[in-house]
Image (tube, rainbow, N blue to C red; front, top):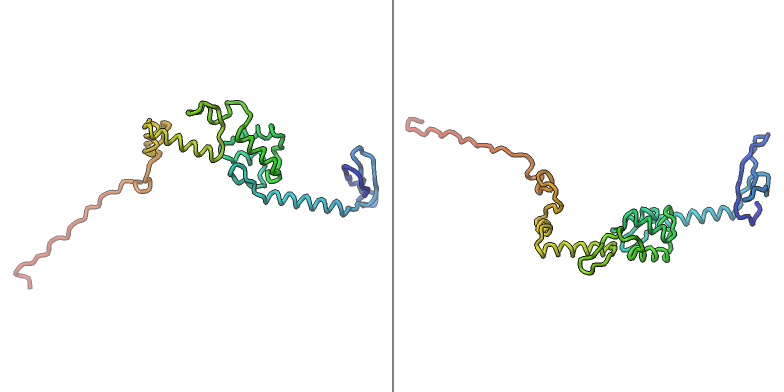
Length: 215
């Protein structure tokens, strides 16, 4: 096989003697070699190295914003695993950072992971996508991700409990906050109270006769 070609296209053709022969063509379509199909050792080694690289990427676990993501996942659904990152933000991050959505997340370099984490912390996106608009204390429009989102959620619930608002009282009682019905759902001790058990009245044994005439 001739070396120095950037791209090889191999076409198989059936001869009169019913033997396969290979026409090796370059990108422009000109025939470089015609004869029996021989595999070069260098090409085989390159293919083996590529397969090893792919297997290594799939086995790798990537950690982005304190979230472990399997390397075999694609970038688009993998970023959506992070708390606070929706499918829309994941798609926007791929487009802004020029990363292929269908690429395996295990193949990302350390620099690319750093760029992704910095973008998710401070995304340059329209404000309506943010999950913390007009913050209660600062009044800023922010987007919280990962542990910051969980911490802020706990602080908001504590504040509602402290001021004893309706939502805070419902949180304290362990009942639904957003007006759901509670007749059939949100019932505690469901297994214990299932069905009404009938009371069984125990009948007393008749008194034995202990008269004088008994022998």
